[in-house]
Length: 254
Image 1: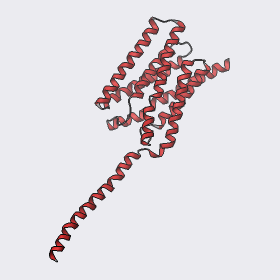
Image 2: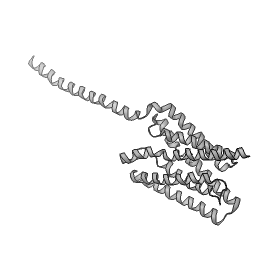
Image 3: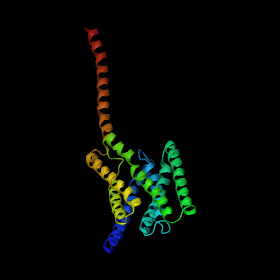
């Protein structure tokens, strides 16, 4: 039992480290967003759903909800602060339609968290509070891990990984796997199950990256490569137009 407890703590610490890198990974993306003053084709959905997951997981890990899971609260509390920053930046630079969409989803996210927190505090106690909060955290953890599916679909469609950052995919895999083991050792299905799903989806993202990594930015390159051909075609058409009058003048002289 002593060894299991030590391993449980070690995987929790490792989960905190990989989780921190996971939450910091979008900094590269948002540096690009701020420099270009545009969200381009990046989706704001993963950041809003991650914010909800962090809030619910922070709540679940608190001692009066789920004993011996304070490591869960520490990393997810940090993540909630970072994700809130990403969402604000996204809303500043997103197009009007996308801004309205993400704002609406953000309102729903905050409403869900407030409802879970109030119900679990005022209406539930002991094991019932843990189970209720754990189910809520697990469900939205799975949704969070599944939110990049739209980006994965874009990667398959465009055959380019330009909008699926490698480090984000890597740390989804590492974070999901480490917390999955942490949940297994602690016999906590509310941690093990959603993070097991996260580890599998992280693996799928890494496989896609390995397949299409050589095509990064290919769509833009192909467009640029096409422009000289179009310009050459136009110049050839102009030369043909010039030749027609010259031929007619030659016939007249004859």
